Amino acid sequence: MNYNFFDKLEIVGGNKLFGTFKNQTSKNAVLPIMSASIMSSGVVKINQVPDIVDVTNMKKILRKLGVKIKKQKNDLILDPREIKNFKVDENLSKTMRSSIFLLGALLSKFKVANITLPGGCTIGARPIDLHIEALKKLNVLVTEHEKGFSFDATHARAGKVKLKIPSVGATENVVQFAITLSGKTTIYNPAREPEVVDLCNFLNAMGAKIVGAGTKKITIYGVDSLNGAQYKPIKDRIVAGTIMVATAITKGSVTIIDGCAKENKSLIKILSSMGCQIDIKNDIINVSREGELKNTNIVTGYFPKFPTDLQSIMLPLLCLAEVESKVKEKVFENRFLMVKELNRMGANITLFDAQTALVRGSTALRGRTVKATDLRGGAGLVVAGLVAKGKTIVSDVHYIDRGYDHIENMLFSLGADIRRVCQKQK
Ligand code: EPZ
Image (tube, rainbow, N blue to C red; front, side):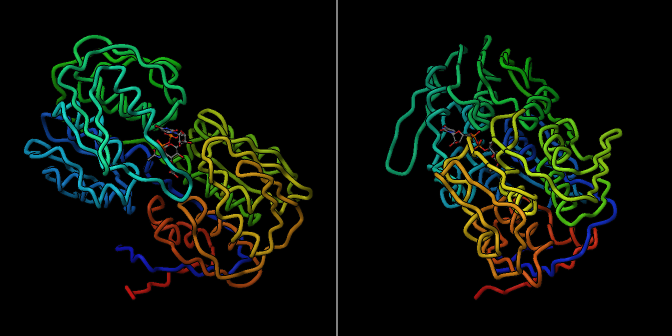
């Protein structure tokens, strides 16, 4: 189904969620895997790709580079053998932060790359200094110009890289770049997110030799080329987490298939401590809540700590806890954007600083017309609307459509009173 930029979501609160939810494939696994496919000397098939705006944008960027892309039901077939240029389309790269993941793949394939600054987004400046620092360590020449950066890897060589911050994007770029560097490249303090591990598994399926993904040291042994492959990326732990919180906030009972139980350990621990019943068997998660919600304190961090991407989604749930909870956001500098909108719905959240929020409990949420401020903040407002008294209208749903494959269908199928109001371009 097509998304329109001006769509809105209308939610009438009060329905409990019941039923079974089949999780979607992970946005943050699919995007780097799509970009890494350009390094292949053959055709790549990616299974069960979600219908989300970021995938649509990544397809546009790859097609502009000369990659042939076909859709076969929910699978994508990518043929990178006739890629002509290495310049990522400037306007498209501005629409999507994840285009920065192309840097490592382009450098690995062409030994040169031009990246327009992907630009920040609402949750933060999203700099790329760690990407640049790491590539320079591998003797890549980096030149800054007014629109972005040029990279020259003609004299690059394998070596050691230590990341100051375990950045997901920087790790994924260095891994992709190092694949065709002859010799051994080691990354210390890499990101350990499941999506990074999945990218490395995909690259190994294409013939790369990467060891240690998911640990504190990743080693890449250079190979001459990568073959085509068929690959089924992991499921989306943040979408599964969103459905768990939506079930908890409505006092429902939902079975989540491919719920990413292992990857969602920190969320499951928090929800259980708040009074939810959670049973897990073979990655099928049964979540329900009958009693009152206890408060908790959340500190976000790098995997396996509590994911920053679930912080906004937890805020409405914390509003319903008996007493106050404290939330510390330690990954992004501006990730409480949706608090203003949530407070307009009756929440009572105080921001002590950009990283610390105090969420007072026992607050009744009321339906309002609110604006999504970012992808996960928007999902948080939808979760709030499920339990707010009356009707909530969420505008700027295009943020949410970047990562959720029709969030309204997910929730409607579980009994929520929610519908998309399609607004044609004004
Ligand atoms: C990835 O973004 C995810 N996006 C984000 O998910 C996720 O929130 C984030 O990792 C953290 O887990 C994709 O995978 C497409 P980082 P990324 O580099 O790679 C700072 C979502 O909602 N930093 O790990 O951009 C940065 O500012 C999205 O699905 C530098 O300072 O995140 C941030 O504070 C949102 N310099 C921290 O590191 C750099 O060069 C972590 O960023 C790079 C990052």
